[in-house]
Length: 329
Image (tube, rainbow, N blue to C red; front, side, top):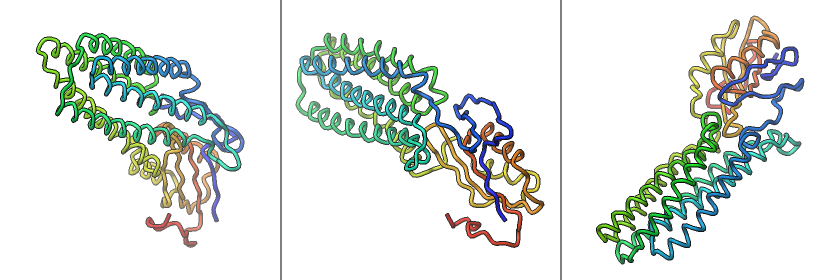
């Protein structure tokens, strides 16, 4: 009654390539071959970015203690979180290149989602530490060496700006690269805020401004982290990736020639850059053929960025499918 097909037909390899980074290798098994996104083109960017920021964290922490600046220490804590985030993203991207095994039949692509979730949790922990110390400094202000803070934070603007630039070209193709770019760009802006605060302290002597800026930094981190936490939790729970309109996907499939109904339709993330789809299509007129199904898969990839498609065709409408009801998974 039914037949399975995948998105890749060995009779006609399609060579379309998309800007959203969902192009796969095609083998006769009908399975997308392991491929690389960030590690292939951005390994050097990760290495340079991690090295620059780790060195800056050490400098910021030392001078933050010496200058009694909570704003500098808060920024150092944030930058340390970004270093760990870059490390996790890099490791996950490298592991995502490993081919599937008998135990991990999709490979380790999903590690990119785990990395994003871990990064969000790490940033939330740093926010908590910054808020606690910032409130304490508001209550018991400590003299701040404004000139030292200005110099160190100015260095941060340069280093974070350079790191952001390293990831700028990949931010439209990969969620991990976009997260790295935004983190570094935000860091440069935060460092600019610290410079301004230090200048005001030098002029006015209002040392509580240091603690206020550190709390503002915590707020900026929290806002950015909240969306990262929400998105990474959604991906880890197999939520439909952002930018994939389910109504349009269903409408496309139901509009194919001969398709009378579509059920058991599922779309989920295989990684932060790859999306999979499975469904049952009822085609009473007869199986449309592997070439047609491959064309459907090509179009799903081109329109919605869904690069791993599995379609089960059912031809007998009088045979009930146990998975037809919407509430059945």
